[in-house]
Image: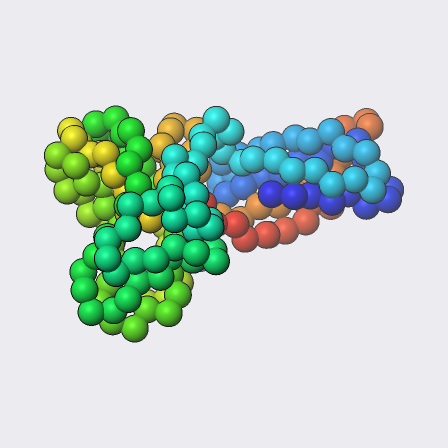
Length: 193
């Protein structure tokens, strides 16, 4: 997330995040981050678990060498493309821990037939949710003994510091040098993988 400060900002900005229920009711603020700021500057921050890292190499799909491709798959130009007509896999090994959950995020476009199903494979097949339409998706799969591969683009170990998957909303509140709050601005929608 990037925050730009106006020319007459205070000395800090608070960023607060909270989820929303299926009925449209906002939940309590679950994360608050305070950033010390100076006028006319931009800042970047992470909400939730700041220690997590992407477990997938080459998730931007620029280099086919980071992927194992079955016959129907090709990687290049920033996309992985599948030729219709055959059930094939695109995969990449990474180490998992049995009992832990892994979060996935990916974008599908141009789907005309069949489905795309992310999965952890190895000793036990752990499929995610089958996708049959274009869009940006997130999934959550629990590893079991022997899982060592994931079909697709990004994966993160879920920790207790992670926000829940899905849509959240953030508000930004400036504070002056005396700690007095300015107007709360928001909501701004974010999607958590």
